[in-house]
Image (tube, rainbow, N blue to C red; front, top):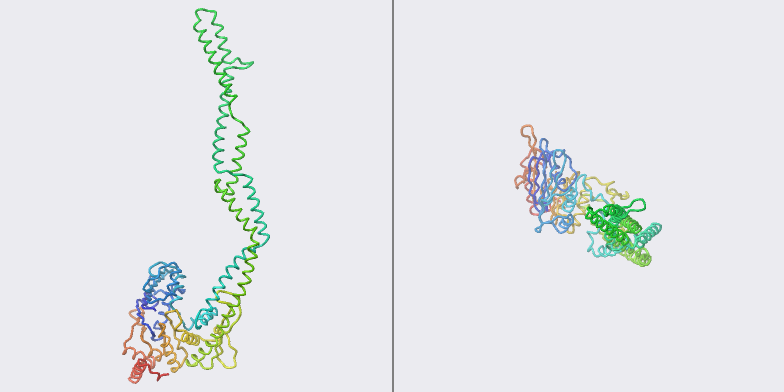
Length: 558
């Protein structure tokens, strides 16, 4: 239930804190005093659309806080599904700030959230029904929910949903397997090509590293070969060039005849021997040098192949081989899909029969419940001074969904002989509120929403009808907190908590205050509602009697 509503700088309300009770709460006040502003503030905290026009003139921002207590499992489930942590004691705090520029910031239990998240929680907490705000009653998609709420149990719906979810799972898998055959063939052709490409490549773990090392060796071998060739040629020469050895022998021969040059001659012969040895060593190494240009070309070609494959299938040999295994598995899945397809097709046919049978059972039960709902709504509406109303729960057959195959829509006929039509086309705002009140009266003990708000439900009705509406509101309030904005003294007299909304002008500014009334204050307000600005002793006495009668639970005003 809504425990406390705090409002700051909303329209003409500078600051207000309203502490609601369980049961029936009413808000009264003169026309234009700001009763609708309180409802606007509640709409804002429930995540409904707002505008900067809601912010009090001259204020930088408007703030609304709502404190709830005793929120049930349904609300806590919504909070949990939003990724937030519900409070163990069932308390809940909603916060919304609206800047003068129109920007909003929201919090749930102190945690930042979006307006959408706030609305999701708000929809589970409060239902607002006003002159133009009975959206759930006007939404045919919500009507099947009302019917299901009246059912003795949810076993039939639960049984249907169990088999439907199985059916849905099989259908999704079957749809995936029966995708366009051409697409499947194209995918299989591509997989075959890619698998062959990798298999033909015969990739080995560590191959790239080994090839790079061998390429380095071969590159160095070419440089060594060139150096050895230079040594052998320089030392040994050729037909045109005698080389170092030839020059040294020539010089030794020139110095040998002279005894004075004997030592030089000996050194030259020794150098000649060393040059010959050097030439022989170089030639020998050239003969044994392993530097095959063809091998190097092959290595370069293989490394290039591995590089191109890595761009397509993975940076490393491990990744490429892993991709190969993955594509083989995909191919096997496609090749053996026909077998699974056959199995799934049989399961689909079996489950379709089961889900259709379950849907028929659900429809049968709903129609029984709907007949009961029609009678009870008509009875409640007759009590609420809407006699002769024909209320019809119209069934159609739609596609199978999580709630069955039924399309359900509430229809009414307000005049005898007129065919029933959708609520949106027939009912006025006041009629919609009374229809919703009738439905809520019937379903009050099963509704998970903890707070109902009725905005001027008494519009266009007589005092006698207002009294009956008030009695119904009080009855509903035994199971659900009810907050009602009203101009009816009869309804106001039946409330457990009565709040007066007053507008005052101070200086050049208008201020609205919200005040909880005691017995005397309530009597004066009831007298004002009944008689206007002049409160006579007779009116005051009548108001006091109304309050005492309401307190005693008498029905003399019915």
